[in-house]
Image 1 (cartoon, helix red, strand yellow):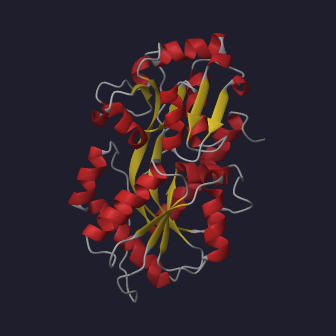
Image 2: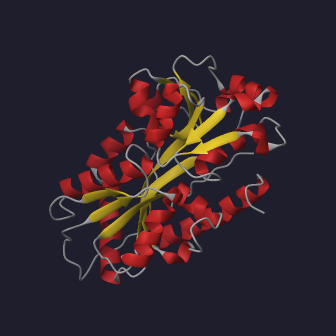
Image 3: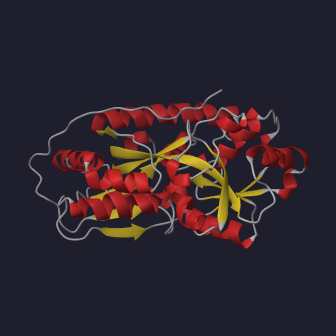
Length: 321
């Protein structure tokens, strides 16, 4: 059954009473090289500065640990009322909240600002690895699961972990507990494991693999998108290989729980301006992201709906009770 985890909401907000911010910061809750890092550095620091939405350069801070939990805890405990701070978020954030992995925090513990793109999931292997498609991978997973180690940038039970399990379930595998998944703080470190041969399959998102794919270091054996992603060349979709799975990792931002309403309105509007800009559209397409937008209260409703859906999927796959 198709798992379509993308819903589009559109809302318009006007920022009032909050001047163009200076001394701004975006926290990427992982090591450099992954999707959260990309979200802070490109639509955040780069495009917001180009559009004049922030004064001066936006600082990007990598704060890895706990699949995003260290960053969320730091923001809530120490910077709850910081109007100049935004944090990269994605479906991985919703997944961890769905599984109660963030030290008791819930969807109501933060302020959901907006999303501006969708990063479709991929499975990738080293360029010289003898598996070339999803069917071959699933064949090995069925006969000798101990031979395959999956690596990704989200924590155990997170969105990257769930993607190959959805494929295995679609192939009729009953016991999903036999598969090895090792978590890293970001897609960059996880890809190093695949390229070095210490792990076999990277499970992550389109934007995370482009550099290594362009360099000929890896090959993508499945994309969890409805149609081929042009930026990935001839990489086949899971659906084209007989497995009707769509898994899109939206990319966006949240803010501290005590952010003022004026600052909240400003950031929501800023994210919407980025999403609609020619600068971001070009960069989004260049980096293989699909159009997806949701802002303010609609984004909050969307995120809470995602958490509900992911809770059900996690229970179905035996990740949580």
